[in-house]
Amino acid sequence: MKDKTTDELAKILWDYNNLHQVVKKADVIIALGSHDTRVAERGAELYLQKFAPKILFSGGFGRLTDGNWTKSEAEIFSDIAFKMGVPKKDVVIENKSTNTEENLRFSMDLLKRKNIFPSSVILVHKPYMERRQFATWEKLFPKIKAYITSPYISYEDYSSETGISKKDTINIVVGDTQRVKLYPKRGFMIFQEIPEIVSEAFDELVNRGFIEQLVKD
Image (cartoon, rainbow, N blue to C red; front, side):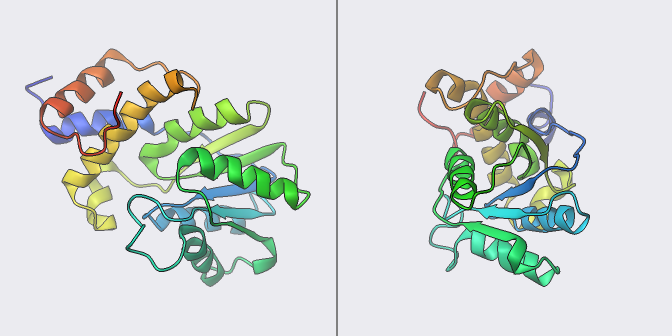
């Protein structure tokens, strides 16, 4: 692994965390908030393509938006959807959650209060968050079918199109891969097998100093 470039190592983690699932029609679209507004655009596109009759935007302020945005992630995302033509009557806003587990749990609690009981959902997040999102959903709501998707964007293009530095992107991908490994032990998500090539790439990137988004084990 040491003869690979940093980008090659990061792309191994990126590809592992992106599930590339085929999306099918569902009862509700849930777009999880973050700094990346293309998630909102992807969710709105799916609604406009009639993949679901309702769309929920979830997110208060996270580690990259707290102090930088004046409105919650869910509200920013919903404004984008409205501009794209999604009617307000079909939008639900959950603006209290601060992490993935809360995104999903608070969203389902809110739908329940509105007498919406989906048997299937489409979950929309960033490409490198797909696996973590899937594993968290399966821990919380294993009886409800979830289709996982994200904006179509490559590792190579991600930083240039978000304004986030390449260094920060790699730190984030390393941090999310660590959570896939660590969080099942803490009861936050189901176990996901991590291939040896992914473990080796993760270890090498940590050795190269990409540790800013790691959590304490």
